[in-house]
Image (cartoon, rainbow, N blue to C red; front, side, top):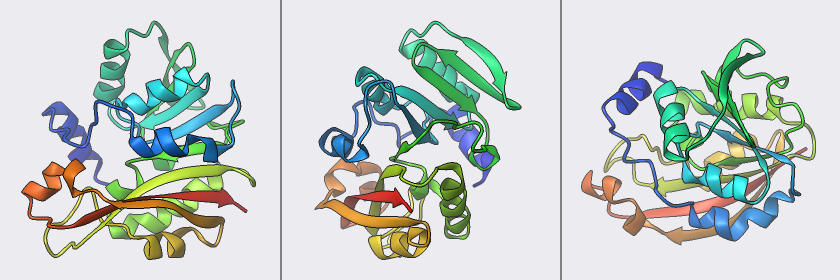
Length: 218
């Protein structure tokens, strides 16, 4: 993951990946995470996503990791949070009621940062990773989560000859190869979704399927 690339995207406000509403798969498939009020839920590469607000409204404690401090501060400002920046296990972290938002590299997170977490939601982390980093991502996520944890993961499949990510095409078969050593992988939903990815359409993509899988940590 090219840190400078993503930091510049936020600096330039080039954030076409940001959605102003919670993802429809999160709304429909949330119950598959088997969480209860008060449980923590981890969101990797969280940006300033409204998914975080939606999860918090379900009375979950939201734990995020985001590379860009600008993104975290935008989320704080836009949602009128009243918290403080602290350092937790060596990493800057914004703490507010129900939110613990780490600012740093996902690959520098440890299980200690995510103590108590048994659920995660990945809408944009895996698809932000180039091919050479995806194995590392899958292994690191497995190392962060204890047995029995569940991950709701959203991904896309499109012809990368038409354009190249991010967001990258990471089809179901690749996800199975990446995760099946440590997770049970179950496809939950899939649909044609080019209509909701006009940025990719403008770059030449003619067909795109969007799907959600459930990863159950062995």
